[in-house]
Length: 132
Image 1 (cartoon, one colour):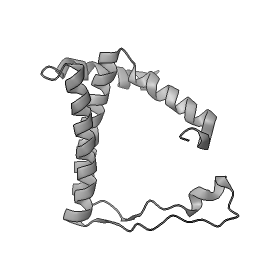
Image 2 (tube, rainbow, N blue to C red):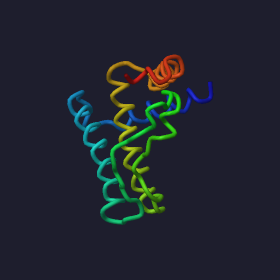
Image 3 (cartoon, one colour):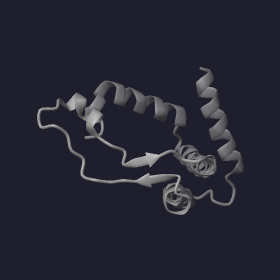
């Protein structure tokens, strides 16, 4: 139950401080904008800082690999680790994105905690078939 309090507190504070952009249209576009800023922060870690690199090639796995083994053959295409500065920027941008996600939940009458719990249950139940 303690975990739920964190979600409730976060949703409550998002509701308290969401003043200028209270319209559903504003929240949707701000959520999209913050998502783009997360993408930009990761891209800048690659192109600006260079602490991480993208080494992308076609994913391949042995033809006889079982579906459950595919993860062992797939790559994130990332090389290196984010430096403390880039990690902080990415975390801040993710936080802003979470704020607008919480605001979107508030405006639509959803509980962020319940949404996460339901998604957790779906993934746990359906496993690899969840995202297909």
